[in-house]
Image 1 (cartoon, rainbow, N blue to C red):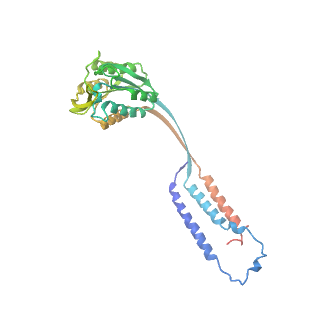
Image 2: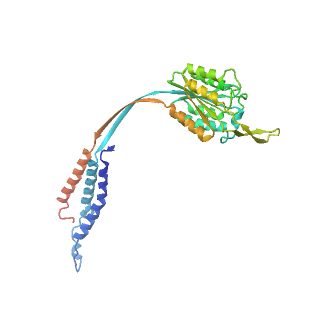
Image 3: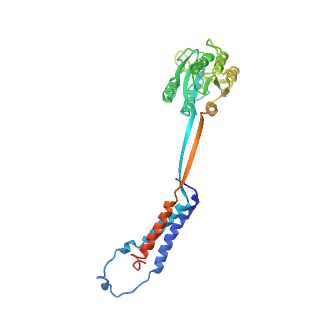
Amino acid sequence: MEFAHPGFFWLLLLIPLMIAYYYWRNRQLQGTLGLSTTKSFASAPKSSLHIFRHTGIVLRCLAFIALILALARPQSAFSWQNETTEGIDIMIATDISGSMLAEDFTPNRLEAGKNIAINFIKNRPNDRIGLVIFSGESFTQCPLTIDHDVLINLFGDIKNGMIDDGTAIGMGLATAVNRLKDSEAKSKVIILLTDGVNNKGSIPPITAAQIAKQFGIRVYTVGIGTNGSARYPFKDQFGNTHYEMVPVDVDENTLIKISNITGGKYFRARNNNELAQIYEQIDKLEKVKIAVTRYHKKTERYLPFAILALLFLSIEFLLNNTIFKGALT
């Protein structure tokens, strides 16, 4: 239910004034009569009409409310729409090498990347998303799926040491491409996140990017790590944790080439906030396309309220000129 002229509802403020005037007028019309005794009234027939002495003002207020509702022009709105959706398939390829344990992010690069990526997944319920992890080699942690609860659980389980250490960027990208190449989605996207330089694997990153281009896959590359050096934990022979500052070496040139070849974009994240903003930008760049045909119809509904107002006024008029005539003040 909608109202074409809701401003008329301000007239409802007059109702308290109407009631106040009614009580003031009744008090003015009342008189006093002195009697030496009330015995003569003892045998007088009793009437219950005094119980309904305020019926008139009640009916008048109800009529006024109904009239205001009619003037506000209530309308029932009925709408429907047809939607067609073009889905997006997304593979997230994330580095889990030892350098991802550096603590220039909170609590470290790997955990920060996981948490922010999980929020990204939650905000895209209509897309199929999968996960590839890589360090010295790569494998698919989760194939493309619409069951994001399963994906998030698998994402939460990844940790450093699951596979041999190193940074096989080309292998990670190639594995993600392999998962997307047969997809029939209108848009195929890879988000590649790493903090290092390709030093392992049999497939160079640029070769993997060219393969991605052939299959119409767009790659967004994210270099993660602060400028200069970062605090890195390591354990001594007794199992005690120590820290040292290690240089941050992100191969930005290669990541930029990958994104340029595939029509994607390169981002650099130096802290948690920047990484979260990067995922937000990618989210905006890769929105699901929706074609909508919308129909809207409104129907006037003021007549029942106008009839109610007339009915309440008619009842008050009839009661005042029949049952209550001369009986009520």
